[in-house]
Image (cartoon, rainbow, N blue to C red; front, side, top):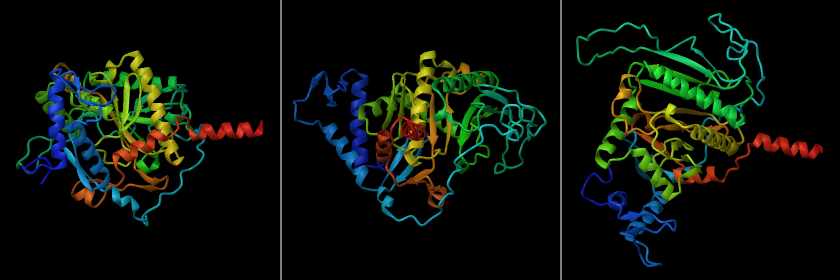
Length: 418
């Protein structure tokens, strides 16, 4: 049985009830959260030294989450995750990943992503000096695939799948990654993301931008790049996020992730970075050890809607987040990341106000640069499970410096020589 789904009131259900009351009052303008952190009802703060019932419920809820195993609900994707914090104490005797290659050549004429290199289809890359977008030589989706036709049985269904796949290089050098690029260089990547979303979104209902960084995440080429797949259908995860955000908006009258960002700003325990226009946090329902969610602070549905100021700020906060990732274990931190926004194509004209633009970061490392989290066994057959709590992960990320360890080490070596 799931907490909160039956009459017995658990700490999770009690907290949900308190939050529901506060949410309704806040929407009526009778509840607000002051800078002091104390709950104010109908404009009257409770006397100092007297914590509110809602505050006590939330404090008890938070404490129990750190001390006992439990399951957490992901309202965005309508799924649960098992949290077992005590398992971090167990000794690790499993697989240890090989140490990453320390140096990557800045330019390799045999690397098909480098400027001037010849790709598998015989095309020669231009000598680009910024971002470079081109058609994937081995696409998973093609625009002219035939329709499979009707099925003869309901258990054997198939549908049409058409689209395009592109590759986007971030930088002409192979020995840099996003955290080592300058903010203006990252801003150029953001602009390219927005541009390709607008271009492909004019024809296709879903444009998926994603980056697999590191061999651990299946990346076969160290050159800094991402992929863009546009499809004639909404993928499964996009459909789940569509249903969840639409249902929440219908019930509460506001975007799910906009309200979630507001709540995390009040609670603070899972925040990693904040800026004028963006939030980075470890989601309450995170599956991966140091998973983060990147959210705009205002209501934004798609990447092309970002203002110049928001794009500048996004480039800056991305650099800080990815620097923290690399600093955690002093390695080029592997991850899969991707952007989710409102559907495009013919769907763009429909009501999409329930959508909030966001980026997911899913890094696999758990204990060190060579020990990763595996999603196998229970995770494949039952549901996701994590050891480190999201709050502990956020605390560790918050404490890390925003200067990249490679740059700090280089500065120390330069100072020693001087």
